[in-house]
Image 1: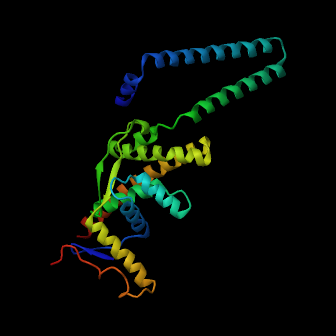
Image 2 (image 1 turned 90 degrees about the vertical axis):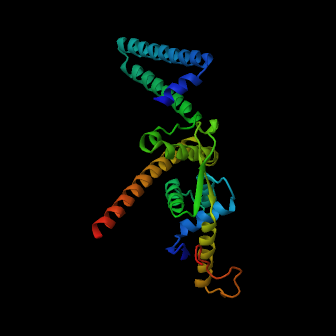
Image 3 (image 1 turned 60 degrees about the vertical axis):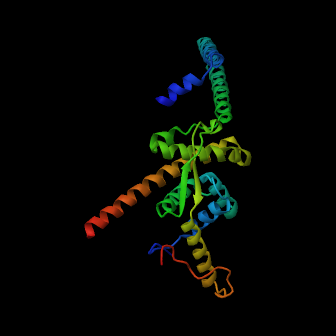
Length: 143
Length: 122
């Protein structure tokens, strides 16, 4: 929550306007697309309506994918699953390697590697945490 | 195996490589630097999780120490841990590398290092 508030503080006036403008434009595009598909469907040409709907969906998907690929992941999963101090270190290090992965494997694979490394870090951290506790418990039980 | 303050520590191969990477990078090494060095050496992407866990264990054994670095805006405003090898870490690394060479058939007397030192011993 604190990060969200900080994020809003960091955003300047121009970027807020640009954000809402983009949101507005995409909403208008969605409504126009829906009306287009609906009107063709009303005329009875179901095959044409399906084709337009598919193309529209593909365009929306491609645009979303392009937007996703342009920015580095934020590491929300790490923030949720690791203690704050450790999460900071993990995200810093993963982001420092992210550019290298993009250069070597492309944005799509770089994201896959980022998420697999994130998941691996979380699983390893908690496994190690559990093993330490079990070892401690074993010491108490055996003594 | 090296003896440090009367305790014996057997370094795993990964721990040895990590200690070596931290030692070669001198001060202010991040886990990312270590992972990059290991990935380049092994020819495949090393798991970050194992690097973090090994660095934690080395830190518990006081073979490395870390301090908090400055937050970086390009990295999401996060502050990394900066690792540095300790004197005990250096000793353990020397002993481990020496043991590898001795087991590999190297002549003990010809090796440049002295006999395995014991820190904290009189």
